[in-house]
Image 1 (cartoon, rainbow, N blue to C red):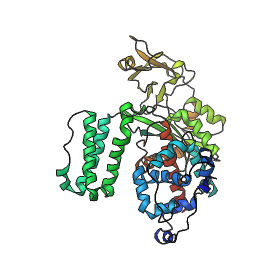
Image 2 (image 1 turned 90 degrees about the vertical axis):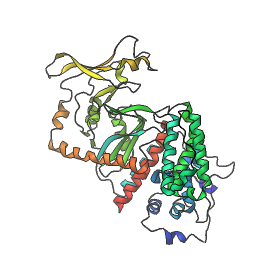
Image 3 (image 1 turned 135 degrees about the vertical axis):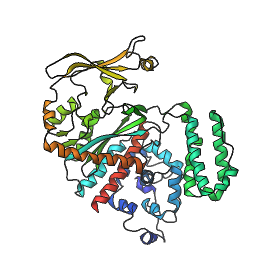
Image 4 (image 1 turned 60 degrees about the vertical axis):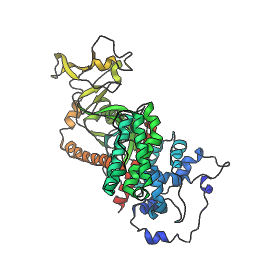
Length: 483
């Protein structure tokens, strides 16, 4: 067994934990709440059980990643803090005098042990199981929404990334000791990446020579981030921006480059399902998956609450067939009926426009055709910027040189008559007011757990980040409700 690879240490200082760490400490409460032995079962196939040297306890490695999600620190800083923070050592099942791991072990653990593992669904399912066992979840409603996360490398040049990090570091240094300005190297004034790298290396060397200043947490953390960029990230930055990230649109004139996390949450604010996609994906297309994943955790779902993105025809048919109430207002621009090959284009409900497979949004729209009995025009034509189409790397089969690029949508007048009647009811209006809760949850993920920017490159890295962040916020919520 993997757990036999680590020998239990009997420490004469173990009672220090009961003296130093209060009963209401969050990490102590999480340790008491969760039986982490499920990690052994999930990871045993990824370890050699009868050959090689003993591995670091996988539960401890998993807990290190959970600490990163809770406290938003780099690998180096989370390991360093576990050297002296007794609550960290207690949480990691270490004796007070135990030494810490090498920070590089965390990277290897993520890449070798957690790769191709459905960690997101597993961890969400575990927290929902705990919440159901404790009677915390009593509602049968889920609230759905999507939140965006910017790619780590975004659409900035490698030099801009270094410039931003070095600026943040200098500001922290000047706040601590303004006299160090005289020792700083001359700033790079050109746009040459290699020169910016040289400047950053000089800046790091100057600060590391000032050992006293470097030990201050407010300086040590931005210093480590800059070092990571110089030592680890530049090769990726030189190759390309994040290969999996895509352009998504928050409104007609606001976009981002990165990913979306589609979330389902109970009215008690426990996340029951999540789907991580690239940034251009349509919110409404994920609804059925979110419902099925929520049910798979043992939750009974009778009501779904969401914005207009979720009121498309397929979702109405699906929820009706499952006897689920769909609290989602209709949007008259959502595609109805059969589609042609252009189905892969996604509708952005915030901007009221369609987005092509490359992530470009339509620039205008126009109605066409005679009005029918429902008072609607037969077609809406969406026009795209042909200058972008001409240089698009995936234009084959989508755009012909010299032509304009349009996308037409047929509008059917009475397709949603039942839903239109339902949304005027008092019950619908009351339940719709619960939707604000998921906006607050998205804000918590971004501002307290670093979910506004991806911590690594690629869709798999984003899924791992989502798994740990959602696991952390669910555990914190369970502790609060159990209190």
